Image (cartoon, rainbow, N blue to C red; front, top):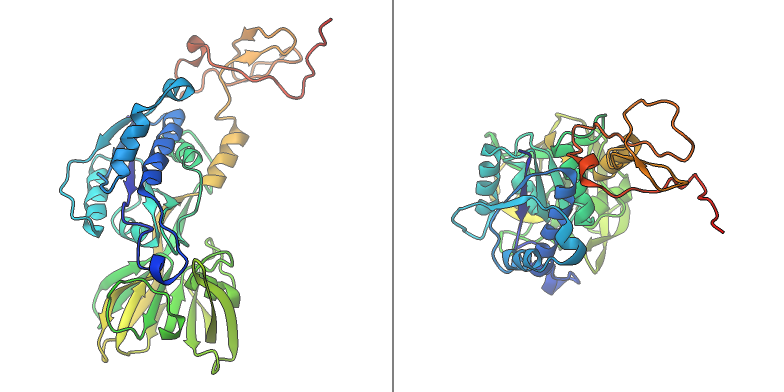
Length: 395
């Protein structure tokens, strides 16, 4: 049985940046609808079961409405069995941790995460080598991507079911490992670690550029929002690049370089950059000791005293499913082709076997014996006409 885990954070996309910037609220009803669409893609790829973290605040209710309201073509689509984990909810990061640990025990072949950078950081810290599919439903999202859940489900299902071969379908992300006071790794981040002069964790969200003195990023995308965008304005760092970037910031009037970037949705600011340099894999970077807070992936998490020594190491992070690469490979390998043939000039269906030679013109071969195509020849699956063959003109 092929199982896939789903973690949909009901709190993502709802922090204080809705009040202090132009960020919008990501509706929990839409998160439930996304899970429904995700299940459609998973089912089409051959996934048997979805193991889901219980989600309050309307997410689960929305999902159930969509499941009960399936009619027409939607009702004909196979969906995986849905198992909602039985667990006590604290409505904070502990829920995601407990859910991921329970999924690992099942085990699941992949985990789909609906959330922002913070949600993905928590899941990545406990999933081991279970591949993640990262879907954005948060605010300053750099790690997860905005993507149609149906396609993400299809790609995740193909990987989970082992239906594809080839390299580059799943990649190893980078992460930043934080230690305080010379101790062991205390926290991790997937996108950035920043030192801010703000003394308290408070509402957690980070949006005042003038308070940030130093930052490290694992990758820097010019199309991102937040500190990743600041780093990209200095020098883009691809996700697949082995190195990261270390920035020292300064007030714009004192900095040798000033960049204009989107720090949050609707908030564009001038940021002064005093220095920027590459960080090699495994390199340990000491941060200047000063009172304030340490922000991980855009959220203040650790309060620092005047003498706290902080070091950050660039290490290896979670495995991440590359949806674009998976769908391209599925097309190239013919994984989604129907398992019969069709003669374009008469419309009759004829089964064929892999490697069959001498097929008549107009016959579109499909892999009827593919181990993941379950009874397709006996179930009367739908077929496509070969676009390269012109059908005869009647009359």
